[in-house]
Length: 510
Ligand code: ADP
Image (cartoon, helix red, strand yellow):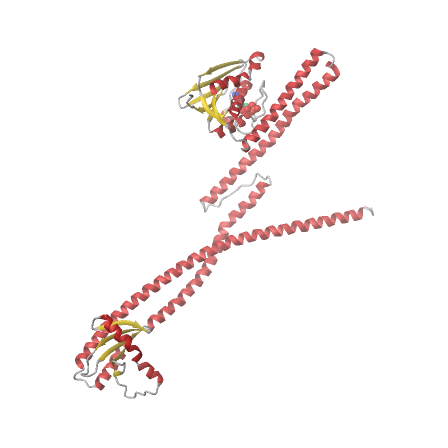
């Protein structure tokens, strides 16, 4: 008991360590998963926000541009209309009015239209209206009323315009300027300014609104993308979980692609299809192992039994010994062909082998293949009826095509009826020629027809087999012909035999 104690402790320590390690890797996996989910969420959010912000900013800029343009046009039209009215009134009234009257009238118009109206001399000195309490010492008033700085611009714009007046924008206001002769010896100018303050206030308000809308868009896109990413990723993560289960051999998983998207439904369908195929292959592989083990075991048992017989009984009797040795040779051949079939199929279907294409005279080649069945003709009582047109050439991998036709003829021999007859033909049909091999056997049931080409499939029927079969023959044929791109098929009537055929493209023989 005492000796066991430390052992148990050791086990516990290892178990704790393992547990810690697996928890750690689980945490790591979860973290990685979280990271991935976050990145998808972030991606959606970033795209969505950027797009919405772009739209907001673009429309804000467009709105601002259109607003500024139309406001300015309207302001210019308004100013021109008012200014010309004021100008003609002042002009016609001036001769009779005194400076005071005019000053009062201009002040009245300024208030009425909310404009700055002045009559200036060439140096920018205000001649009208005269301020009764004008105090040149007060700086803000002085600054407001000192036009000498603007005079150069005013005169320049006036001469540029070429007409009687100039309309221009300067220091945040629209200005109407014209030469207005009021006095005989002094050049006088009418200055009317309309402030653009309203425009700038409105633009500032618009900016605030754009900022508020942008914040709102950010919040909205956050909410929408949260919902959207959940909506999009939930079925995907569910499918991922199920795919893991599938990878671990659980073929009962069922993939659903929630009905909102065609692509998700298609993905689910594809995964279900992959599951079915995997489960079929898994099932067939298990069956193959069972079949192959059985097929390997039978000749091995025979070899062992006959070798023992030679050692114990027939070793000294040459006739018997040879007979027993022949059984060993035959069984070894059977084993060899089984191994070859398994190897062939794995090589062909893995695509490791590249097809060695060349022109093949099939008319001659069919006879060569048939020669391999000579022992059945001579010793097994089989009859081969052959009808081959001459000079039929195609481009193919000679060895592989030979193997395919050999398998088809071998099957016909295996499955033909009591009369042991097999018909082989090669007929020219124009653009292609048809190889066909027909037997007189039990035929293939309609429901089995699509399965016979599948790997590892063997019918449940028990047949007498002069040629060894592994259940791989037709899938080797199918793989070879598909890789060549040749059409092939089978016609079968239950009770009346089957015809397997291949269509070869005909190449001109020169
Ligand atoms: P195997 O002949 O070794 O069983 P194959 O892949 O060549 O394997 O054939 C698969 C199955 O197709 C066979 O088990 C058999 O049921 C069926 N089959 C093939 N050829 C014929 C035929 N000529 N007549 C009837 N059944 C056939």
